[in-house]
Amino acid sequence: GESVGLHLPTLSVQEGDNSIINCAYSNSASDYFIWYKQESGKGPQFIIDIRSNMDKRQGQRVTVLLNKTVKHLSLQIAATQPGDSAVYFCAENPLSGGYNKLIFGAGTRLAVHP
Amino acid sequence: DGGITQSPKYLFRKEGQNVTLSCEQNLNHDAMYWYRQDPGQGLRLIYYSQIVNDFQKGDIAEGYSVSREKKESFPLTVTSAQKNPTAFYLCASSAGQPQHFGDGTRLSIL
Image (cartoon, rainbow over all chains, first blue to last red):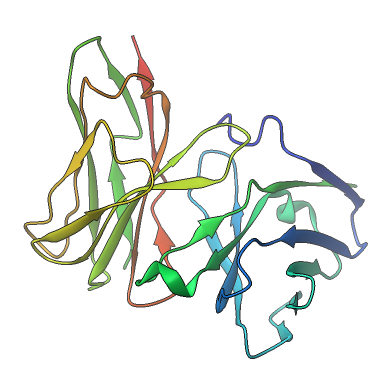
């Protein structure tokens, strides 16, 4: 498989527990935020996104929270399953980009144990 | 099925050689992007194209070139000027947000 994420921070959880992955973003003017999941040897897969005029958005088993005061983004995964094991990336779209630019974080590895 | 196809999945380059990575999409997206991914790091933008026959440099364009002659295709050439080409290369496309990714090409040096 891919060597992506060899030196990433790792979050280890038990199957069935809730997971919280955190991300600090850099640009206070960013207006769009997104979470991707990347499995070994694959491209990033869209999970959920949120615009800066919201502070919470829910999907199926996932919730994204945005705290603009401290420039913090989190991804909550409910009832974590073995299939959730992957590297998770947050990304932001700074308004100054002038187009649909995304700036990616370094990623967090999620390891789900039975 | 609609999606983004990158080929080849693995590619090897000799010293002084240019190689071209293919990216094709059938999502009818105007915008396409190339990213580089190194171990332990996030994705970094190489080039992007918002429309056919137009493209701009991203954050790490040196040693790379692209073309956008067709809406569906955005090939990336890794030139001999790129001194550290070993990486995982990802192509994406979008109609606004979010960006959708292919499954990447792993480039290695022989």
